[in-house]
Length: 545
Image 1 (cartoon, rainbow, N blue to C red):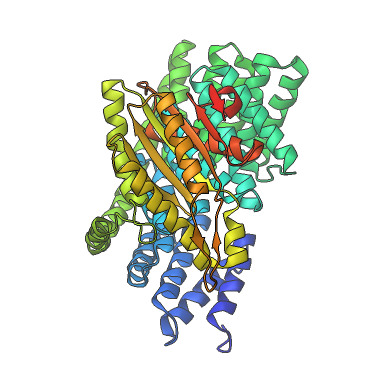
Image 2: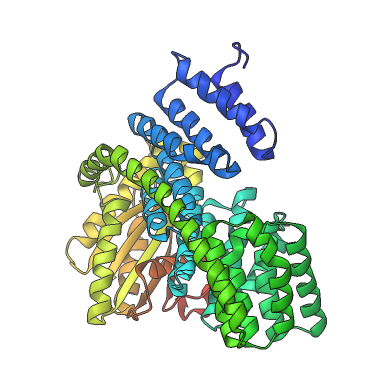
């Protein structure tokens, strides 16, 4: 390591090696950490970052894997000192991935929940999209496919709000659509799976994006082959079967796709595609035995034992059961070491948790607008939604934003933009104060949310229309000038219906956001009210006014 290099220079070197995942990656991570530990000018935030990158190296390259917990624990302590919630979110997300890969799904879910709450603090939409995708995948592995779909949709909302300019946004959107289609297949809803696949292809064509990683291509092919068996030609099926068999031979990149792959093979076996299943097992099993974690190996041997029993092959079944129990024994050792790391992280985070609880209790109000913030809204949403679901009463969720809000910031300055938000907050306080069926909060940025409890479509339309008119009548002062701005325009997306037993609160948010998107796409300043959740808001029932 050169003594003349700065922290930023060493970090840039690390990021380059990290993207290449090759020689020099470990040395670059060690150099950055060594500099951070011994330099008197490095901040707590930079120390947290350096420890995190070292831990991330251990996880992603599976080198010095036992050190993952040590580095992440150190990173968490320094991130807390710096108040760096984004770093905390990344730490918990990596630990969730680690626990999940080792079969500790419950611990994985707890880590992901911590990652999500910290990412929400800083409004990191890209990370929120990733964490909610990870939570969706955990639901998928737990066979809760409806919950998985809801998590995927919630993740997609964050990506859409952030835009599709980055490669990362296009990648995760494509992956979300792919996984949503696979979840629908497990529910037996081939039409919805085909719709997700069609939307995926249209999205990738529009944004000129295609999967390049072997794992992602493999997941894509699982969805494509399953749908080709239902709707495609024999030639389509044969090409996709050959592609999947070739990919298993060429690499072990499908290891992380094992849950989706096993579900597909079980479907294929039930539907009589035994030759393809036999081929996949014959070629894929040696790769699994060479590369897979004990958890994945145990799941594969369990599936093979079930299949051998159905095929009345007792000797093969006994063989697979023996391998299954061996893998489970190995998995127990892995679980113990992972759980030790988990307990260390819990102990290290106790003070952080206590501090966060106090902060959260003190931070229910948005400082700028004076109305409830996102944290308070999440609590209210869950409680009020469960009440409506239990009592089977109408429940409405509106998301609205200020049209062309960026224009106010760019033209008149951020002080004027803040004044716009503040006046909208004051308007919501006045308009909701007299009716206990209404609840308003700031959702984030220039977005606001309203809950309608037990109100008809007509009552909601009247209130939303009045809100739109009164927003347009506001007089917003321009910072440093005597003039005032009038004619604020807001676009409003609403869902209103009686929740079914399958609905979740985030499902309503997703639909309201879709409705808002439809308004933005067609004509800003209008109101869209939908009654159910569909990928295409125009087909979801309701109206745009």
